[in-house]
Image (cartoon, rainbow, N blue to C red; front, side, top):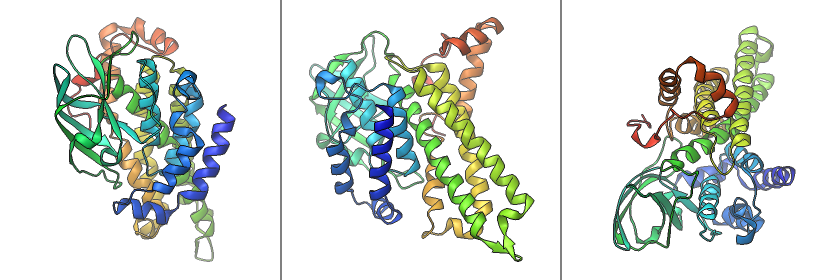
Length: 357
């Protein structure tokens, strides 16, 4: 299944996602033709259980889809839709073959059958058909709300991708369900971080390819700049970080099953966030001023790297969380946590104030 996913998504995105399309999307257009192609290919339902019409794919299978979304700077919420449909399936709610999104941070209150409050920083919120959040309280519930009944405060990240606030006033959910065993109240933090790790890994591959290609073609002082040791060093360091990010992100997906593998996800978020900062800076050093121009493809990737590295927790916050967990449990807990892929002291991500800073 993984091989089929990889070949199909790469072929589809290579043919449809162009720099021109990305610029139109940054100007506010919704790429309906692109979403229709993804819809018809069945990718939106890939994570849904088979009895709901999906493929029942594991996170290990889905990694190649989310990585491809990052590699091609996909301007639609396919990764978010995969996560939402996976969670709906776990909760016994029918999957939806439509653009979906979620809010890891929300202030929602329930009054009988009605929900009010705000979902913060919803990826592609203005374009989503439905959005998911987890309500607080002693018995957290997964809530599926209609986006059309929300007031939208439009916001953008550095890459020009929508990150909207959605305001609900006494709205009846499309569906609701108690979180099943194994899904914590902060499941959307972990799921969002998992997605951004794979997207970052994919985008890093594109940045490395663009930089290597440019260094080979750009001639200075009578020879390609790739022949200069300083440039070779920059490319080598970028390759190291790209490979490390890919391994960490894929491990987080491979270790995640019905419950997210918290330790690998936290480690991968630290690793990919660091790689994003280092590689983006070096890529612009290799390209010089041309990499910042509106016409060049490099800035389409690096602006996403700078945005994604901070979404669902930045490098410092995740590193602090890992360090505190190990210190609180003692040195004897470190190796079991590494081998088991989880740690009891990682705690609730909902209390991490300033995670997006």
